[in-house]
Image (cartoon, rainbow, N blue to C red):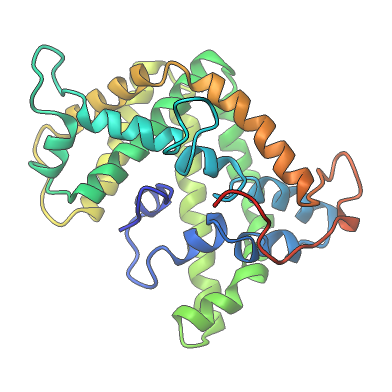
Length: 294
């Protein structure tokens, strides 16, 4: 299972039996020589534009560092912002009128999740909660933009991902079978694309509908992810968890604003230039791990 330093893509993208976590670690991890492969593989302006957004999510100096490794503001230095909120959610009561059971107790009890799996579920819920609040409070068109991007960029992004990672994926996971590696990467992009379209459509709806739709999506994922049957009231528990997480994230915009400055500096420090603002093709193509916090 992924640790607290991992993102929730292992959960949102369903359980995989071949090299679990390899793609996530390679593409969004803490090692520059792996997460920069896509940037280094990009050669055209359109590929650079895709790679620019992709590389900004790494866990060394990108947005996922703040979300999963260490927050930037005082009091958040010992864990990522999302991880902190996920742990708080696990300790929060399912019913506000009674301290027990907590969501953590329900996830590890009636859901049958391990403690690591329970944290991963809470992690995904915390991200859903902020997505809903962003669409409601920051940009009412956010969901439409997300769904449109997922629809339009998939055909362009998949060949770039295959170019950057298929050879290593084949060598590490498929005994050198490049065709299988490319097929698996293509399938992963397609699944992620479907999830992002669904997410965009969900957060475009009124808040109660968004909460219900995302609870249903998570319920379907958990049905594949966890070993045993889920309780009959699982959907209601997940809806309550999303609503509770939304209340725990009242300072999310301050963390996002700080993150934007942090990531912008990280991109510039590592020679990764916005292709709409400069000649990205002439930017340094650093393959070594950039220096910075691990």
